[in-house]
Length: 185
Image 1 (cartoon, one colour):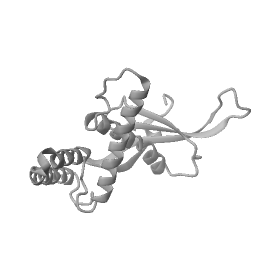
Image 2 (image 1 turned 90 degrees about the vertical axis):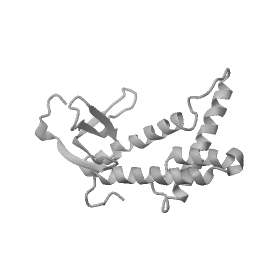
Image 3 (image 1 turned 30 degrees about the vertical axis):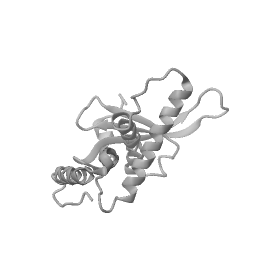
Image 4 (image 1 turned 45 degrees about the horizontal axis):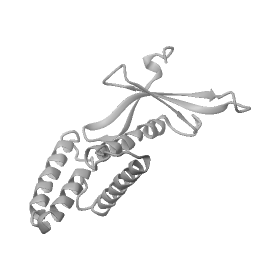
């Protein structure tokens, strides 16, 4: 990367984000990877992504696709998909209790993690089920609605739904600030 000039990178719009387009400077190059155990080196494509906002932030990844089989836009998009994995871990830790365990044996840790994964599966199914009516449904929204429906026989569920509608409105308003043509959704 030290041998590359700024002109060697291409500015790419990767995907829409809640604060406008995720944009980065991207460079791809064909490389050969050999682990000294296989008979031959393997051809890979090295994807280098430099942040536009922070010049020190550089992300690297290897792809099995050849550099001629995909566009630079497609390579950048595939590399950016890691965000959704990290987002799932944040939701599991922050909202679903992934980090809230006190165990003594490995099997208990496995059971706890399995329950957290089941909770995330339930949440994701709810998001898919309600995506037309509630496109901005979050893990927190589902968790709070579940608590409200179970607590005191569901006496507070209507209040929670009203609060969720207000949160949804604020999220949509915040997002549309960055999309003057209202083309986010």
